[in-house]
Image (cartoon, rainbow, N blue to C red; front, side, top):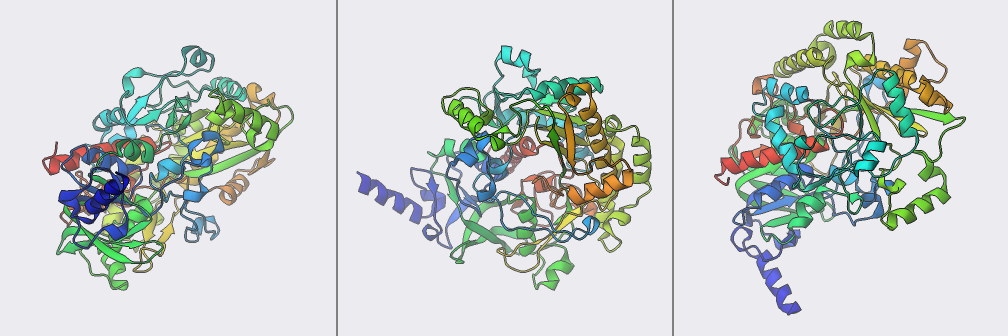
Length: 617
């Protein structure tokens, strides 16, 4: 029976995929595909967006889908699955570096993004939050019609299975939620950690003393105040709920759903402006092949590599393409522009009398770590239930709640023109779109959260600047997909971002000085201990911050073509047929907080858009 099954399996793979897919879902290999193999849909990129769309399309047994992913499958290592053992390095793009950052002294920085089946959901810190409703409404205002808060809300719910914490534990740890804004039968497991460090109470009470209000539920469209972090973790096993698990493994019996891993999509194949399929290359073998799509090619390679694939395929700025000898299929100067990310500033401390345990204890105390791992392995609440080195609480606020200086910060921001930030040698459509973005961001800056603060109760506070006005870019530097593109964060090219970071840093000083935290004796060691002069502190911030929190987005924006747009509100690439983009590169503006929940929801909606387009709903 085993030999017979193997024979039937090989026969199924080697035969035309569109009509003769096998009886078992396949992790397919390139050698099993011919240049004439055809699927209904080919998806370039097997991260959150790609696997979500593949999952929903293959719910129809008559639809065939091939996902091509640059990276491998993870091996369910502890560093992937167990929050407290968090170690994403094996599945990151390494080495991947930015260009020298002009506003940061010419320093180049790492570019963290997942290279694995499941993408960011395999390597992220597992936080699962939505942004303020105003953010999604701003997307719609910028031209992403049908992508406002009310439109996305049902897809947020559709994507998740929310499990409420134990009532007694929740009451004693200030955890609140609103069941009406959550889903209860979606693929992603969402839960709160059943363990906490004693210092969380100090942070919570300190925040209250500063007038920071608790949020009932940050997923209700108002992600502001202080709140307990929700995570994409299965509460039954306290293990990561990645897209690989919740969007592929659970459907492993679908014969119409194939994944080709360790393979790069090198370019899209066109007949005139109609996408016919893709060319792909083995990342180790270097062999090139093609595969065809009868309905649509869908790009979901992430905000760094989606624009790279588009540009290599002749979609982008015509001057850039011509300089590399690439024939233009659709001249879209917005491809690779509008890069946004969250800036991260770490503030470090020593203490005279901190609580034990705290957010650094797993790393600094082997006895405690061994004890906590034994509890975790026994299914009991443990520090290993928390993502390594993190805490449970987050503070997110609009600018006016971070500082009394918001009016002068906004005044300085309004004094800058788009060309002051982007330069004068930028296509007029890019400048026009950015001018609209600035107007909307500055309009909402005092009602929408612009940053977050999370103290891990131990050696580190993380400050996140989530509403940047600076913009970066992605540009190919060769005609090979195996060569990294030029990645320019454009960090702090708008000095308003540094003003906002400074405001958050100073608010953090206020928080650490409240009686509830001061009693622990925190002593800052970085970035600016003992410094009070604003300009000196800003220089220290510039020397310390990281320009990326692995939240890259917005490089194939869903805005009108005349505003530098790349895709329309139906995810279709302007000037082409049979080609769409479904990942975070389509966002006009970066989401606040962790982007994971927004990527899932956006992909859920995109799947319905694609189904409707092809009469599959």
